[in-house]
Length: 154
Image (cartoon, rainbow, N blue to C red; front, side, top):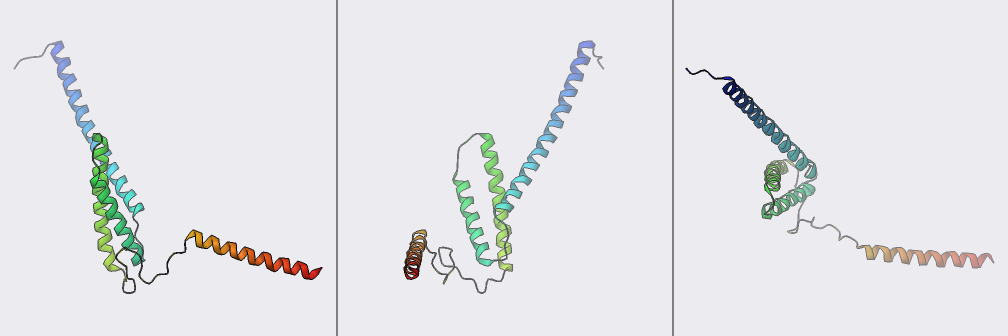
């Protein structure tokens, strides 16, 4: 067996240290990636929460599916952007599976959705224009009533 001289010992020690640091770096990067995955899953849970309302859960499910389709349609970017998008897609797919398992457990017997996802039989939403027009009419009526009251006092 050959013995190493002073230079050979330094090289061997340097290689061992470098190898140890590389292995430690791999462990650190795996741990960091695991934290990023957990953070992304937590964000998806916050963005698409569970609800006891059947209609709301169906809307959340539709929204999650639309978001997933958009993420999958995106392309390009650098390696980091692609990794982030891959984490988001994986977390969102998992969340959609959780939502779809949760919805059958809800009492959806009274909730019916139209094909566009809005509740059937629900009153149409009043537009802002109509609301402000009604406020204006009410203001004019109050003005007339108060002006008539003021005339009667004189």
